[in-house]
Length: 276
Image 1: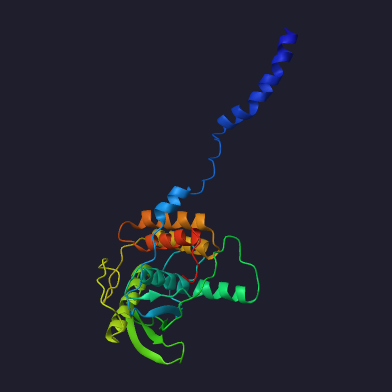
Image 2: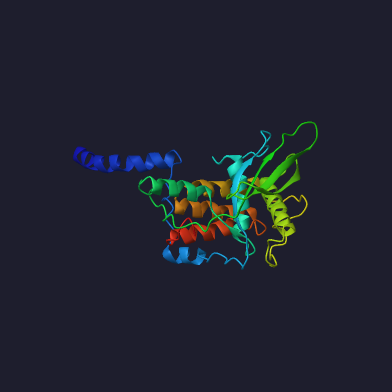
């Protein structure tokens, strides 16, 4: 009998880890998510909209926000860059404006000028088409009322001349997508008043409102979108793809910006350039 008990001891010991795991409610860790297949990336790929003849080349400069920012966002992207990225994505889909990427391109071009190697996964810098007008502006603080003013201007980078200057009112507590769309709407209206826009019919009616209108996009969707921005900034295509796709799921069909960003990421993933 003792021999039987001794021979069974290794089997009992071998079973202990599994029994302890089951008793403690543990479960095998899920496998880490795999990257998208080539077919999945291809499905995301869309060529960049070709600008119409005469479309002004617009870049986004410095946008300064007030300190009163009510958005409970956890993504590590400064609020001013968050708004600039949303505006840039909204311009990128247009055919009457040629959006010129400035933030990522300038940093990558400076590295190239200094002879530094590209970062891991970084796309080629490419050649920028050049900027005709730069949008810049600052927000006045919220004081005693429930609104603040944005002082906006379009600057000619070749001469530093201000081509247009205007003000736009925004309410306290306005969501970031609504703020970005209202900024874009005011920019398009100003360009239209300067007679610089070719004729184009926007298929997304709510993309460039001429008055304030809440977007209805939840902050969880915006947060995921900004996680995509942070991943794209370090050329982490997979995490950028996941974050933008999640933002689209959380935001619903009215949150069109993640889809535009996804197409951009797919183009860069396929070998596109920052300046293209």
